[in-house]
Length: 476
Ligand code: FAD
Ligand code: NAD
Image (cartoon, rainbow, N blue to C red):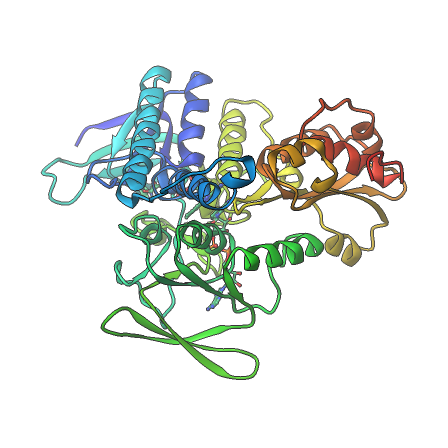
């Protein structure tokens, strides 16, 4: 078998791998990217979890369901009367698939434009800088042998499964299944009140499902600022999500119409019957088929690939980035690692500032934050001051009819440097970028307070919260 040489071979074309590939090619490195993903239509599809069954399809459904909910619940506040609002789930799903198709094909176009060689199949490490591309079983194609001084593993993650609720793809599903329901289930249960549970629970709740979310922990979103998390919990419950904390799944039993879910609360055992059950209890590193054991690639106790501060694994010339190395399982975290690593391979000083990675939970209102929470700072014994400002006192929020939530800005007690920004409110996902930029530039709350914000905008809540750190907010 002939061997083709590259400067860099990347295994996995999710947001970590495909971005690394493009950056490598931009830097003049001869780059190949191998990916095994098969899309909805049974055809190879680039973009990994994020584009195929993650960020993009979930946001498409969140937007569709948001418009539906707006029509049925808020349109009348604007003087709009809509006689018959009907939800065509098949059309919504078709729209979602079209968006996914356009974006995944877009990566193929980018690869061609930037000069990345796309290889379809499973990448297997053979050691000594060699990788075998195994074609899809039954495809009739021969494998290919590659060699490269630099190999980047970006094989991503898969959902964690629960023995008490084995996913069957129809009644008990994971997040991919919950993105593909053909009709609105009347009764839906979700195990896990994490990011996926809340986002996908919101989609189907808005469309009319009775949604119960069972969370094992007795606290809600423990990594989120707890004052905002408490407010978000109340708001989501008011929207109809029955979120039960301290609720441990003990078993499931298929019934004629769906599945019986048995769980333990602090005081009693309870059971509910639902049409569909979604298991959303986190994700684990995916290294199957990679040949990790054969070449002695070091994994930690949870299965993540072990890397140093520069994404080097224990094997010479082999690096890893994205979900497969752990840390925040976020697309933009993986992509930034891809860019920084490509630059390091090209001899530059690529770097990721892990302290300024934004988080967003796309409920409505959205929850977004960057930096540390009050609870973290208290644990660390760091002195701080806070400024809080509610959206209800923002003119633009009033005009939009979006008055729920607030912005909290935390500044260092001595230096005033911004330590964290926490937002629960409309378009928090967009507002948080200003905070990321400010923190990236080591700005103080005073810098934000002195920055002119256009009127009327939601961003004025950021300005006012910064002013509030020094007790000089204007509109409250
Ligand atoms: P992946 O995207 O998982 O890509 C890995 C790729 O490697 C896949 O294409 C896989 O087929 C391929 N692969 C694996 N092994 C091999 C092999 N041996 N050979 C060849 N190919 C291989 N994150 C956000 O930041 N924002 C969001 O809004 C968001 N929403 C999400 C919603 C859902 C429902 C889910 C499930 C996730 C969401 N995420 C979101 C998380 C995000 O999708 C992941 O963090 C991101 O996709 C990780 O990127 P990655 O490149 O590391 O891995
Ligand atoms: P998660 O870690 O956000 O939440 C899982 C939840 O399930 C936790 O609250 C956990 O306590 C709970 N849980 C675990 N075992 C349980 C059990 N047996 N019974 C009841 N509850 C249990 O994980 P996720 O929601 O599955 O999402 C996976 C990853 O995907 C996340 O790390 C996230 O970063 C990423 N993601 C990001 C976005 C976004 O950025 N908007 C959206 C979706 C997913």
